[in-house]
Image (cartoon, rainbow, N blue to C red; front, side, top):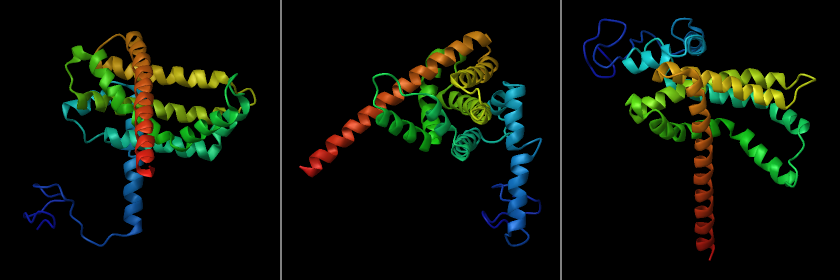
Length: 247
């Protein structure tokens, strides 16, 4: 009998609720094996999804939107894992400290203020990546309105796209250790990421890849502007609330 819904259960999974049959107590060995299988499974795992998005960019989102989901990591989990890994790797190798040492503050700017902004961005990099997704999805609705997809379907495409592009960005973090590292690495990283998402957009929306790359660039810029406007509004509102409470 299923321990979740009470239905008769004779297979490995309950036919009613999907509960897996557990024949023994939880232990570290089984938990570790489950994690490894989910990450390294070449047919269903996390790296399989990543590789397929880079190799055949339209396969994963289109399959997922058609309902063939079992072979791929969930889009939001996929994006969250890569955003988290990106933050962990950047802190581990000190990528942002290296960048800060190599590039002088902008002329006329406050070095301390610029450093404070950089530290905030670096500390909450994964949240910044995740925060851009709903804004990008809103602009996707406008730029790809002929696709007749709804908000959630655009959200799934963006989740896979940003996850795959973040995966390529992680590789570039290590390149800042090169003796000739400079602004070109940042530029190259952005171009590669634009190509990755442009290809995913192209296959998902059935449009020209170069047009999709241009649309992604516009969507990204508009999303960042939208995010900053919302952040300013929230900050000002918070300050006003604090002032009213203190007064």
